[in-house]
Length: 112
Length: 116
Image (cartoon, rainbow over all chains, first blue to last red; front, side):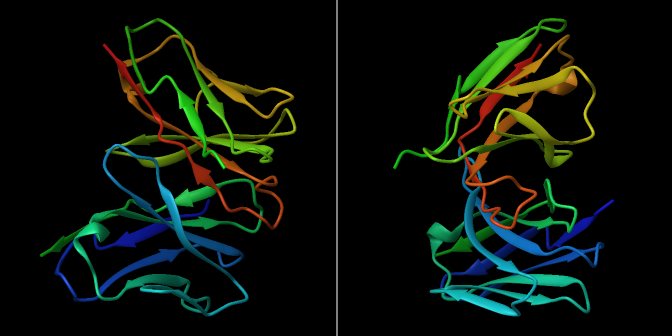
């Protein structure tokens, strides 16, 4: 079945720096790739997503890039702020549909 | 517009008991999915309901079941609880079934289940 690997598991940056989280997947037929942010005591929040017919998508300080050939996609956060500190999850929806497969999560810490 | 709501937020049960968790999706959303989140296994898909029908199921034993009502509200049930069932149970709603193209899912805050 589909497998999603997410790296790094923890990431610490200084406020104002950029942060990059990368996910690789196994099913080349996967077609939808969302990213979620989870703060302590809350459910995951959808922050950005990309579909397989698009290579890059931006939303203010957040961007996602997709490389279908290499089967990986990345989350880029620029000008990080302390409120960006959270656990970030990538996910993949396979071509068969029906469910999202999540990566193991990245704990991002932004130090002021 | 109200988000996804889950009740109760916290629950403590003992081994062997059963539990029912409730989820109300965003108004207008017809798909409800359930996930189990644990530190060791991460986020794992349990099942999805759309128009009162189970559309897909994850790799969980038959002790885990669910249903959806005509108003799209959903419940999940876990029977014969085990210590390993302690987890955060998350509900997510979306406009259409995950088998369609529009699959943006929005999560509720979760129900923290502790089995002793």
